[in-house]
Length: 144
Image 1 (cartoon, helix red, strand yellow):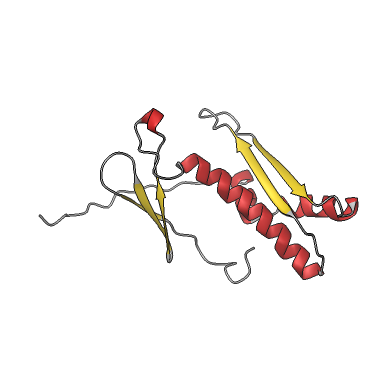
Image 2: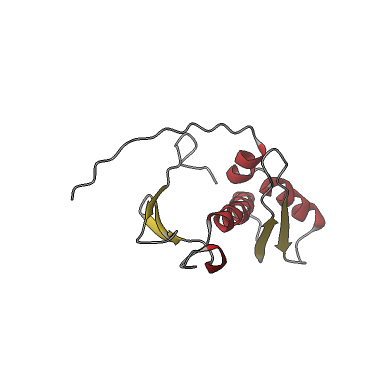
């Protein structure tokens, strides 16, 4: 999945979009709306950030398997990855459950190889590796 971007940095920018918790997220040329559910004061205008994390892992796993299969010349047919997790409290481990749904026509050997490959997707590696955060504030003057 990293072909063409191996050394690049990923960048996302979230900007408040009106009132409440709704934000527009810019990812390169793409834009999406992120919000919180109504139950916590949002407008439910888009997925919440936790759902996007699950979506990132699911889609990265699926695409990584498909890219590997393509390089091998395998026709793997149906691919679906479902991810569930419950955010952990600080200091506790977060457990992700991934279910890889593959065609029953795929050999056991290939299915197992794809499971191993899915665990090597960039998002999976980022989540299981050591993570460091650097936060800083940049003050912005808004014209009246």
